[in-house]
Image (tube, rainbow, N blue to C red):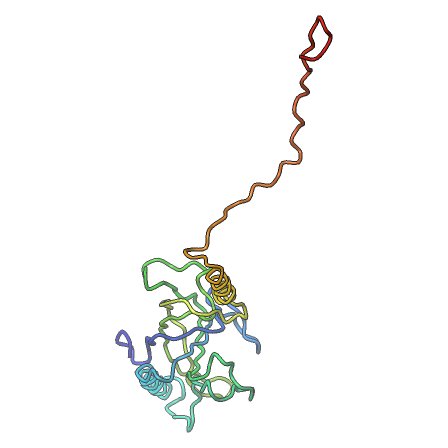
Length: 228
């Protein structure tokens, strides 16, 4: 329960993947464009998972009362997946999902996204990416679609807590050049150099197009006719 809503949860710190938080995207199987994100919940965070299970149970009760005509499905579908297992397609989850519960939440409305350092100001789109860490509000709801009955996850707002290694396949500059920097520092130490690596700054390039110096006419002795 969160903010008095039995079907709503505020997660602990989680990692975000497949971030479609800036621009909505239509599902692969078709349908309305939605904002969405995959939430990776560490299995060690038992408090968040307990809250989620209670909220899913509340959503099931809402479904019995309002959506499923008073009938409880024998096994209602839920949006929680084991990151150490397999996807619906039968393929294993990516390595970033290991040791986590996997939950995908979506919404037709754009989520509010703020940073822990300034929760009153929206984050710049460049600061929002797959791999960052955050806390997310999620509202669970019952659905009935083409004979399928279950509980879905509605995306609320996102509260970014810290940076993380991007999950878009690109390495950060820090990780890419760390070994090179360490090798350079070790070479300086071997040469007996110490202290910070100097900043040599900009090297001035030679000015090849400089005009030639003005020609100086030598002075002549008017009597001898020889140069002075």
